[in-house]
Length: 119
Image (cartoon, rainbow, N blue to C red; front, side, top):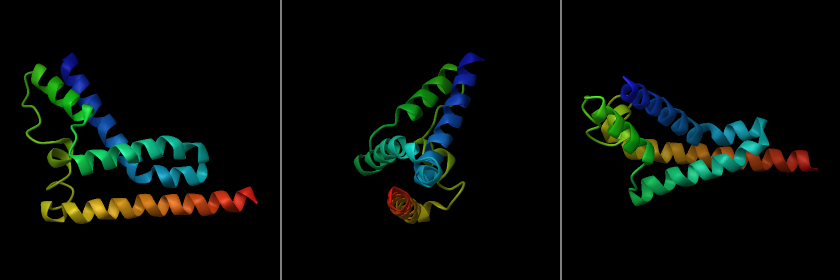
C-alpha cells in the first residue's frame, strides 16, 4: 500500500508542478517573490520539452506503481494523463505553444507591474 500512496502522491505533485509552470508567472503578479521559483520551474519544463529529458517525478511514479504491483506508466506523465485525455494528441504542439505564450505573457505582465510599483 505504501508504494501506491507514493505513486498517487507523486502524480498529484506532478500535476501541481505543471500547474505552477503554467500559472506561476501570474501568481508572481500578486506575490513577486514567486517569480524566482517560477523561472526555475519554467526553465526545467522547457529543458524537458526541448531536450526530451526524463523527469524524475515520472520515474518515481513509474517505479512506485511497479513496486505496488500495478502497471507502470507506458509513456511519460503528459502522454499518460494529458495527451488524448485532456486534449487530443494532434494538438500537443499547439498546447505547448499556448503554454509558452501564457508563461511569456505572465512574465511581461509581471515586469510591467513590477516597474509600475518600483516608481
